Amino acid sequence: MHAPLLPAHIDARRAVFVLLLAPEFFLPLRRYAAAYHQGQEAIAAAEVLQPLTAGSGAIRAAAIAPRSAWTRPAPSVQLEGVTVRFAGRTRPALRDVELYLPPRRVLGVAGASGSGKSTLLRVAGGWLVPTEGVTWLDGRSTADGHRALLIGQQPYLFAGTVAQTLALGQPDLSPQQMWAAIESAQLGPVLRRLPDGLDTILGERGWGLSGGEAQRLAIARAFLSSATLLIVDEPTAHLDRDTEQSLLEPLERLLRGRTALIASHSAQVLAISDHVVELEDGTIHG
Ligand SMILES: Nc1ncnc2c1ncn2[C@@H]1O[C@H](COP(=O)(O)OP(=O)(O)OP(=O)(O)O)[C@@H](O)[C@H]1O
Ligand SMILES: [Mg+2]
Image: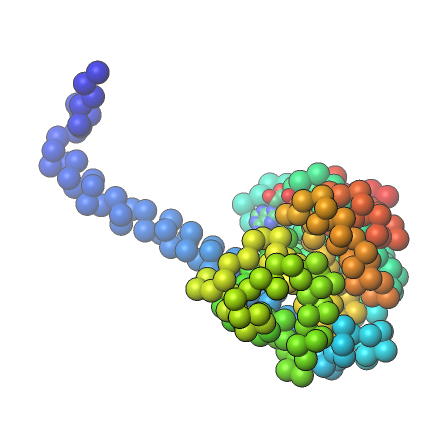
């Protein structure tokens, strides 16, 4: 079949003109896409940098942060009339949510994909300011800047060594402490194979880690942290059954004694929590 190069209603001069203008026409859209990606990277980078602020005053954690090293008690979390609307979305991601989580309790968050789990976790941890309503940590509004340690759904790796990634904000950690956290996060077999051990450079120009491995590195960092409020978003989503199974006991150990919210599609992961709520279309049940 012969397809014409140009449609009949457009001559060659016009076609060249349109072709020349096309990049200019789409420039704002390209800029918008680039800005969106920069925004996403900035959020991910903030997650990596947060150990510098989360649980501040208690940043120098002892080996796998024994409970006695936490200088702050675990806080309660309260959401009052929380609604979140994202720009360009007609339906709110969260709708008038009321929630109270006492100190040192673990709340499991279940619900279908898109039901608002990650949004709820971000709001509860002080990472996202709701459109309406307020989040209180121990009676203080998160608008003051109080934030939980967040183990996000899509962790981001900075270029840097394994040791630098683990020790962010904690310059005094020993290799033994780091390896203990790595083993707890079920990353021992992966990281023991690295060419330069803890000095192996990770990130875009370095050694690549899969999504599940990067998330377990974030879990290892959490083990070393003294933050008393943890937000854990689908920690086993990238993992096979056996690896998920082996992470259950360490996860329970990580969360025990801290206040935590954990979102998951896995019944076994949710079983770690003291109580499970179900999200449906931005509304909380249970
Ligand atoms: N930054 C954003 N901009 C616009 N809409 C968003 C944004 N983040 C989330 N949403 C929308 O808000 C709703 C809830 O998203 P959320 O990520 O909280 O769901 P989820 O329950 O965590 O899903 P999953 O199980 O897939 O992780 C979805 O409809 C989603 O498309
Ligand atoms: Mg999610």
